[in-house]
Image 1: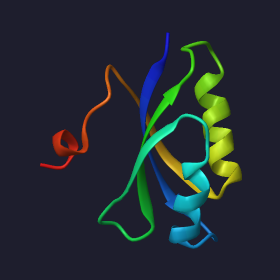
Image 2: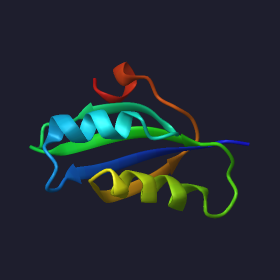
Image 3: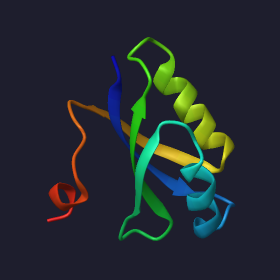
Length: 86
């Protein structure tokens, strides 16, 4: 069974445009949005299973690409962008 997450992070030394391109290739990232805060990114992600360690592997892949992860929240279901940003 999969698990869904909202992840909020910040671009570190990597320019935001480059960061967004890099994290788009990370397995598990479904959607990404730039927030109103400069350099901040909101991700909707899904792990392949809900086994222990899956979210840690996803976060490690994001950090490797240059994202400074600030918040991870497991959610029951995926939301559409129109539901998140009303």
